[in-house]
Length: 357
Ligand SMILES: Nc1ncnc2c1ncn2[C@@H]1O[C@H](COP(=O)(O)OP(=O)(O)OP(=O)(O)O)[C@@H](O)[C@H]1O
Ligand SMILES: [Mg+2]
Image 1 (cartoon, rainbow, N blue to C red):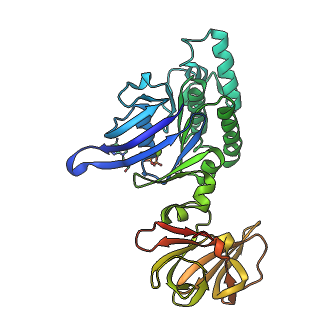
Image 2: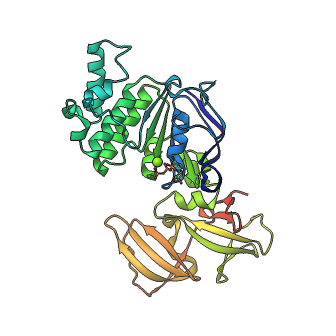
Image 3: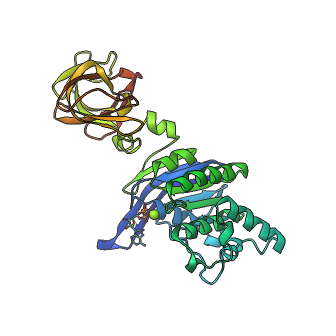
């Protein structure tokens, strides 16, 4: 069901010890959509999710689910299923009983057993259904908690780091399966993660948070190609986007006082200071108007990471072929104008992406 957060804030405590965990957060997601809340530790992801679920009060703002205001309702009346960051399994119950806990009222015993077995097998915990939580590994507890949330019938599923404890291989398999399940059943889900690969793989849209503030809400492609500010530009993408100080001059910009790059039609006043961003795999080595010195050249098995010193800064270039250069050698490099991103030097707000006006 569609979920709308309208100017939602969360403040823990009062006065001198008050913590502003979430500030003025607004976004609207559609029914059937998967949205990832992505950000570093302490940025307010769990606080946001717990306000939607009803385990934390909303300090300011409103939350609506399927057109119904829910932030004033008891958690049990909200139609929301949650997989908690700390799992919160019921210790005296077996894994099967934990997963089936919310199902018994509406379904017969055989139906509950069938549903429990189906979700458990999907998450590769079908062989531990009779165990109690104290006899499970962290990754098993986490999957039991995820299974319990997904087994329930709800208007909205809230999944807080649901696969953080799993090793990379299992995690990659399960995120594919969980996404397929959510899409097949037309469920609506908010997924919390600090792993951008997981957010990109699972989410239709991603809400990037930092310091309690929503930085951008958009598709993975939009975040990569049209980051709205320098934070999102450098947070999304691995290795991070290179950022150079630049100044508007002639028909383009001067970079670090060292070289000029032409950008015909750049609508910025002469002398304006900007930050210019280029993604590592968009830097072209061996060709172009710029020159730097090689600091390191590492082959990682399937790609080369080349670090170049240029105008008192270090730039990283990624190549999918081995690069025949050595440390301290000079190298020519450049980039296509359509691969450049411009940001305001003072505020970090995006000014222009690539070839656009
Ligand atoms: N119950 C609480 N009382 C006071 N401060 C809190 C409480 N819960 C969270 N905070 C603070 O609010 C901020 C946001 O915390 P939150 O748990 O929402 O972050 P998070 O993005 O989920 O982080 P993580 O990735 O580490 O789980 C942090 O500064 C945290 O210390
Ligand atoms: Mg958290």
